[in-house]
Image (tube, rainbow over all chains, first blue to last red; front, side, top):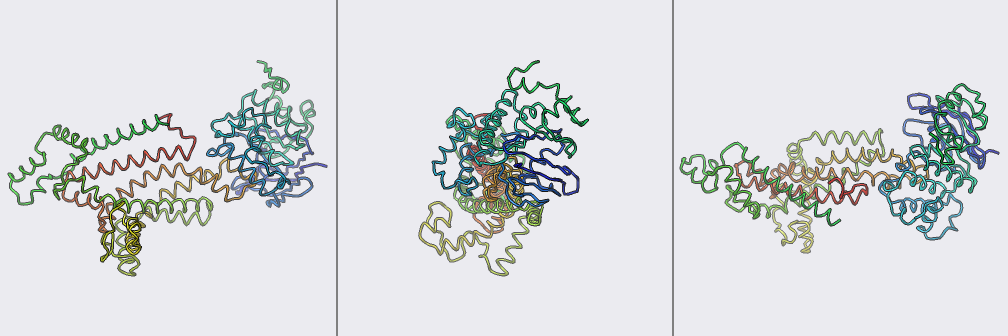
Length: 274
Length: 340
């Protein structure tokens, strides 16, 4: 049974411009599913709509979505908060610039304790700052105390994305939505962050909806991928099939444009040729 | 930190020096002959020349400038032509009245500005926002002297809500013992709530007028900064975790819109201390430095005017120096050590 099911999702602006049309896809438990497409293809809007984060003036006009068998999105109405979290492009901007990393983690942990959405509110009585430090070191940050005392602008983009991943995991979601999480990071950091996401979701058995414009990154991360163009899914299939036997003309173009970039295996090895 | 403090203090001192130099040359450009006015309309040329010599106005401009700067460094602002009193003493004795009025007005302006700005941001592009915009336009377009006269006619003379505009206390009240110079505070310290209440009631109308008229720029800045913060990536992150709206408004919205507010408070302080204040003090017979400046200007009292401009300039520099430190405290991205 699939973890996330999206059926017939359409997104419009207030003035009636259609951004996404009749999109359907599904993510299995523990599976990483990609959405790939160029800028403006509607992939980010799709991701945002699932968490009710669409910007002002943009709304879901039709379609429905289920997570773990429970319907949470029905047309323009958000029925419930899905047990999902999100990591974003530009992690430095995604963190509050006037709060130390430690304070932001404490804010989240206190909120989770109060709301008990992780299903274990009573059990986690440990000191909240220690839990924050443990959380930060669990995403491969060597010196948690130093990082907790810093502001986002004092850390690198890669470091901030690790913090974001730590926060996203702390909420114990069943689905993680990743919107271009490594765009703008340099190649070695990108590989580290991708490894971290892969390891973390595997460890917690979290399903991932992974949005990217980069076919190489998608090939490395995902089992299946939806190719989007101009608000529509052109092809939704296993990555291997799409990579080796693209069925759609647009997918072929996308692959051809991606061939200028390093092949995924080379990125993973850190031996970028040329 | 210590080095930064020293650097800021140095910048402040240079700014104050600049104020002093500029003040001299600008007052040189004032039309009219102070000596002629001081000597009186029917004085002979000899009498005018005597007055001129008495105040050193017969000397060359460079010599006057040297004398002026020398006095300035001794903190001597000269003698008022109009009252024959040392300008510095007159200003310091009147300063508490202006501070009481100005600070109260500033407080009202900030509270009103932040309150309305946040309200507008929360209800952005909807009816609440539009109403705030109407207030901003009306308050920006209203002349101080007009609304003050209307308020005195209706609120004081018509309905008697506020006490008569005859200074800092109504008739029948003695000023409290001098501690801070702020009547409301002093009266409370002296354990005299009746006087404190009377002083507050007298203070409230001019302070409200000044505060309301000074608030639109704060409203506009708080509104746009809060909207920007609420639509930012980090507010979206907070929404993605499902934080309550209040938490997002305060921790993500307001906290990140404070920096431009602080910048603006410096400008509003200028209006409250020196712009609207002069007219309000005149209309309410408020014995502060604004009314003093107004009288001095009418009688071409060169030294009193210079003293007033310098006092305001120094206050302005001090306020902005303090604000620079507040920046660093509110927004960690502002690094005082760099780029100064």
